[in-house]
Length: 248
Length: 257
Image 1 (cartoon, each protein chain N blue to C red):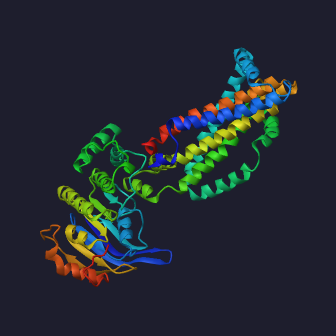
Image 2 (image 1 turned 90 degrees about the vertical axis):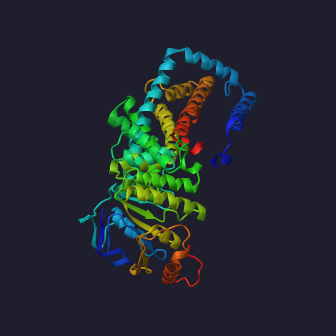
């Protein structure tokens, strides 16, 4: 699915969050949005998800304006988005049940997906019984089970420790390669953006506008990002960080 | 995590047993220090109770009371939960309903009896309506207040997964407010029970538990009075602590694992 932003403005009352944002996202691309806290990156995701409407301008999915949420465009939240009253399996199955799949089939499929994110055996656990990393694996399974064409990731691993985060990035990367959704990734972690994204957009403080776009398409990536030191340094300096200490 | 903050198993039962023994002790001390015709002792009252339970009249009265309670309380739960949930997503409706409840709740439910008696006549209906009214307010209020603290991310996640409004209510709001809903249902039960007994005492219709108590009082039959009070206490405790508590543990299973 192709996404286009045409001169998008978004205001909440007097607060101008996004101003004149235009960008096209080609089918299958992974764009990382990096910027200071509260600059409106998450709002961009909410616009694509259909949870918010632009104050001016257009957000188009395959040429049609986005008016309401749709399972074709799904959102993964930072944390606490699993339902505490449902088991991991029921949480994942709910994505299908809400689309009218019957319970038995949805649970069957959910079990397969939990296995896919290495959570086989944890089907009957409740979210509070497992670690933060396992919860986010479940959230990924819940997102991918509906076979979305657009995947919106709102700091999906922001609450995890560095090692767990890297493991989850690999799980995510595999799933994306397999299913080829168009992905918008909001992150505070420059390394995460470098590792996962084809393009990185660096945003200014509110109201958000793009300071610079980086193109990493067709680059071979690993967690050793030393080959991208120059870009990393430039992104950090655009974000106002002067040393090599990474922004968190 | 949550288990550490409450007593479980044998210790909890011990606490309950101690509370019961304490109440019975006070009663028996009162019985020893007052003459029999003022305060009968526990054995005499227990004898009367086993006698009464064999009488068809008393059993029918008990059954009548229970069916009035069940009907009134059932309606209150149904409407309280539905209104509360709908108030959760329609903000204007919520504020209106909340204000109305705050005003109406200040009127003791028993104060409605003369009105309902005249409008609806002698019979089960006025009692049922009073019971329903007494239970409806805490039920609707607790559900409605709980909907305000439903996490926005839970609602957003369901909307992104394509939930309709009905599915949002059924699959997100209802389970999310379940802990407060059950607390509300227990509160509502207390109200319903008090309303039932006092309305029955006041109306003097038929042979309900409240009527039986009032009648014993009128003829100064203290054994009968204490027997009815005991039945009232036992029934309420069983319903609240056993039935509603079981329901709670079943519905909130995820909190106990």
